[in-house]
Length: 379
Image (tube, rainbow, N blue to C red; front, side):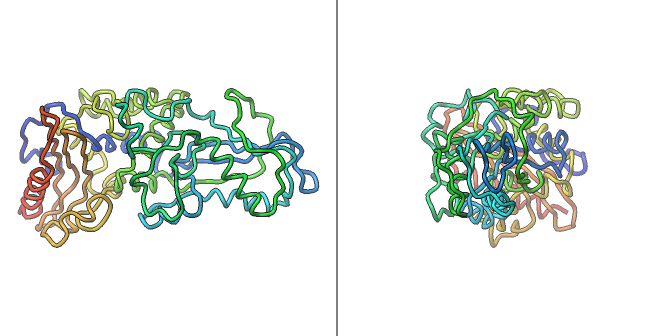
């Protein structure tokens, strides 16, 4: 489907529900802006049963996860900066505690992962994803998106999920404190789920960048981990349950009135082959904010940034298309906004599904390129 300010210029099978792949991130982004707002932030908190006395904390230090999708070590934060994202530096939380005078913890660092459920992946994802680099461990206190991260990484490509993300977060924070001369005699650990921390004292707090920044990274780089973390946060805020199921219902509930016959998503990232969207629905999602909205501003730019940085460079399309691409076995998709030579804007969505489960990506890419050329040269 191609439309201009709500007027349909061209459509072929626009109401056919197909597997959209990563175009599923578009309704997630629109719902997140509706439910949370662009300025929403995530909080990671250091807590204890009582304040330290003379720099000594009598007991354990609890690192309470707030669902921050980009809680980072210094090297991971540096990598995110290279991709235009803002990581939340866990080292800053350690520094704040030390600056407040903390010098010794009589117990250990305990990670609290209770904000979300215990599933580190979407339950109905294909089993093959467990050994593929598609997403990190979805956990409320995960550091570096819950990936196994060697030093000096330049992207998350090829990384695999860490099997114990909460324990790793506690270990990383323990190391950050000890590097600042805090004495910690006990080993890091993970709190038993269901603990009551209402009477605990907050010792330090770490605030993330705003949601709008996270959506920009999720959309432009097609980051699956941020998407699935956001789904759980939407479930928690909307229904009090930090689960994928509650979150996908929240996405549907936020958009159902505006987008007729919208199906409940199977996930937020589009990795599930159970997702279904029509081209008409994708265009309607994009037109909620339009070409000047928050979703549009987060899309990759042809030949310039994100997943489209190496596509269409040096062609008439470069710099004139903001888009979200998608790819799975047997699926190729692309949607976004095209600026025409006359200065107008067109909204477009294309979804290709192959019954055989195989698509010639070169042919699909050529088709997309020709379509975009037609769009940007439209009067």
